[in-house]
Image (cartoon, rainbow, N blue to C red; front, side, top):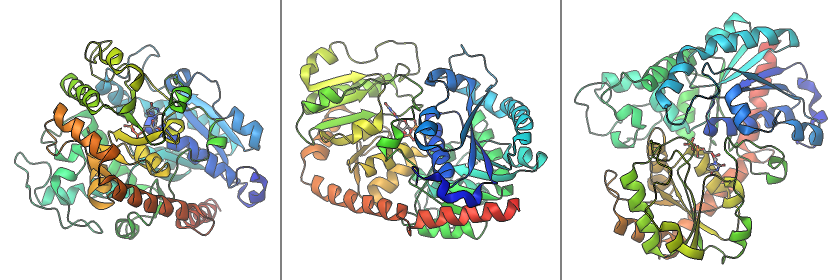
Length: 472
Ligand code: UDP
């Protein structure tokens, strides 16, 4: 109950430090986790990097929530180890490398300065390699927050099993089904996270994953942005190894409360007025999230496919969408040819767009937050996974839950005619009704999980009880 935090005074001795991985898809759920925990009467100190603080450009991002709801959410910033002017979006490797090697020293300094304020719990992103070490050093209860699906967590957690069986880490990896991960139904290797499919495993990201999944074995609790009903067997199996709590969906579903928190790292274009002019369910929303790059060749084919489909569209084309300095990677004349049928914007408040009645489909890279948000708004998905967990999320969306379709059947090839046809199928094809029915049912599961006696509510309660018991 955001409006009445004082109902939950019993936990007033808990003070949790929340440290997200400083990427948009991690900051967003961490911000809403902060609000959720503070609503339970827990004091929260949210840590943003200097760079993200500067990008969000609104000072203390919780000022509005604090004054509206009286929640005890404090705000701190820390260096990510790179100069403010460094271009993080075009230099992913250096950014990840700083987070791997330099960030923990800055975090330690910050934690040291905050323990005097009664901090007794640290909730850090699972992708960090240091949480258990830093928490132990300062005597904090250590909680890991996994912002993706439990299935993806389980695959990484059992990386050693994949190696032993020859599905990962060899020059020639096996291609038959992986059928030995506890709680995970037989899965095709091509549906595992992209990093688990690569043969060169010496990248910075691989080092991060290896170390992070060693560290997470030593934490006290894991929180996961999923719901029990989605992944019950996987969660059950993980629970026999580590206290693992599904507390999702953590998304800004309450736009009224969420509107007072700005989390976007880029300034948002408002397209509500334009959307207001379009018939219900007629607009395709297109976004590939905050991080992944698309090749120029694929982007151009997708643009032609969109033009050929003749649907209305809102397309978020980030300035760094192709990994080069190119200012406009779209085909010449694309926007003028679209006329009033479509708009191209650099960034938006995605939840506001998805919840607009004119939106009828979402062409997505399958980021986990985007999927949860689209389910919440009951918008059918057209899937174009690019890397990391997106590949596995596609399987959940298309093969398991049947709430979306593939953009292209052969993942290696994007062609404009196929793009045109799949957009047509999603927006006005016969199979659309089946997908819409399925997404309505999945949305009901999300709502059910959040109810007072729902699985996520119960799990959150158990987690908080566990914290209280540990802190003593
Ligand atoms: N997002 C947004 N505006 C945009 C595109 C994305 O607000 O124009 C938000 C979106 O709502 C989601 C997050 O950015 O919460 C992206 O997270 P996701 O897990 O979908 O993908 P990632 O960026 O991590 O690849």
